[in-house]
Image 1 (cartoon, one colour):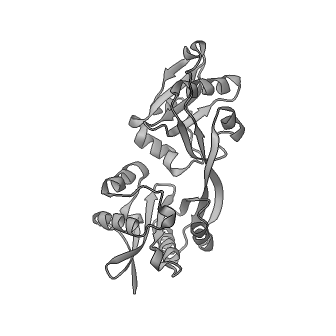
Image 2 (tube, helix red, strand yellow):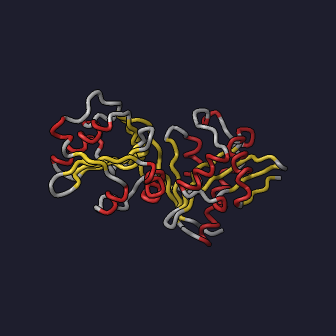
Length: 276
């Protein structure tokens, strides 16, 4: 008999255990999750234990769902079923239970970012009535050998998340959960920033962390924006990753022009909470 239940804050250890115990071959490249890592997810991505579930047979976890919640949506951050207990409806039951709970408590919108190559995982969400809302693409740019030209460097200056927000350059829009505005705000003190300025405004900017993962990157329309963004990226110098970018964030041709190469893709699945 399988028992399913939502969790509490004191179930953090159980959730970590279940997440690791249900690891499959498809998860071989994923870093292990420990209690400290779980706490970082709580802090940075709004993971809520009350939006997480475990499926247990006896005392052994056979399935787990990790959910993050914000005012506008709930993210299914992870859905795992132990390889020895698959094809028994556990994944569907976990997703359906979360949907039924959110139909009562909200928010009604659900999202999940699933690697496109994981056909079995995509099939579970599709079978539960979720639809694909967008394709999220990783873009990588190698380190540049030279910094921005000296004439361009005069227009470059450090910038912060707060500076960009005050200038109206960080407007809400379709982004992956990890780089959406609530995530950037929580990480703002750990992000470096650089902007290209014209006499009138910020023309281009980038925010990035210590390993070169871009939190935000953008440019105003026009020649100055394109030139300025190239100068910003060249000045940063290190290898950069723009993870899970939506087509609306930056034009694919512009990213290629700036030296980015297309990488892996995630499918953004969406659903609305439904009562039992």
